Image (cartoon, rainbow, N blue to C red; front, side, top):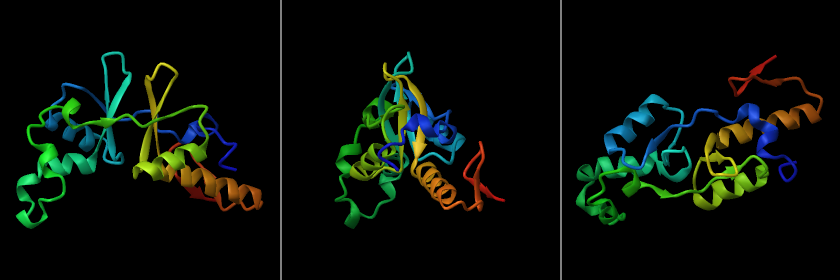
Length: 165
């Protein structure tokens, strides 16, 4: 089921408005992007043509912003990597993404391998066109199983995840 289903097959569930910032964005601007869209766990860094450059997770931002509050006994957790970071380009990780023709299995594997809960969706020129998260994938799979079992318990809605019917 996940091998044959592509991201575009579940386009209804892909978030069409991911949060993004330019590479020069400050950590305050990145924080505001997270606050504006609290359901997302990542903010994407794009160039001036909205092409994906990288990813900033909420976890990384929190580590950076609250490093002074971490007890010294816990500072071994790569705290030095955050010293001197001032912009999105400094804080971002390399871009891990999916495209419309990628399968759900590929999305699951990338999420698992990189320990992320969501991935940006890009077009062939790497323009950011959406965001897909693990809950969206799970919702799609559960709905497909319910339909296959001829069970009408779940129904996907445009606003996801699903409603009881």
